[in-house]
Amino acid sequence: ETGVTQTPRHLVMGMTNKKSLKCEQHLGHNAMYWYKQSAKKPLELMFVYSLEERVENNSVPSRFSPECPNSSHLFLHLHTLQPEDSALYLCASSQAGTSGAYEQYFGPGTRLTVT
Amino acid sequence: DAKTTQPNSMESNEEEPVHLPCNHSTISGTDYIHWYRQLPSQGPEYVIHGLTSNVNNRMASLAIAEDRKSSTLILHRATLRDAAVYYCILRAMYSGGGADGLTFGKGTHLIIQP
Image (tube, rainbow over all chains, first blue to last red):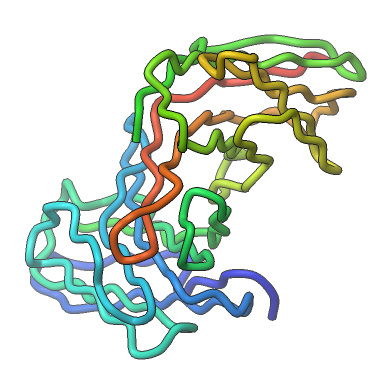
């Protein structure tokens, strides 16, 4: 596997379900990110992890819970979601450090539908 | 991240050069200029970035104005596979925690005509 992978690619869940999205990067990076892309809206940053510590939480509701057990893996735990949470969820990774100089690499995303 | 302004859409013909403009009049001296693109049904893809000097890579060239208040992404010979939304994003050189998320705008929707 190369680059950034995300599983599952598609997910349909009810509002009372609990599910998790998984992201894995094979690039040797030490910063990881979750973004949300809703229909007709720009991508929105959700969470940033640097060296396995959360350094940014962009006012995301508590029904989204991130977890970064090591520098290669990132999870997004979902519970009691709302239909408006239906979106494409994208994971990205980069080198930490002089952040402006480093590019981010994105996974293909998980298309989430909440029914 | 400082604000950028891009045209909503542009159209070009296949095998011709494409110049995608971006204005960033409030850029600070330590902001990098990044370009990403998003093809249909895919995650964003890094294209190129620079600080002060023009940059070239296998995908594109980045021309940065002398006052750094604008930049242009140049695709030298567009193909149908270059049809995508192109985002110009400013990124601070340093951030707390050593990592900083990207702030995406609406970007430029590039249409390539065969």
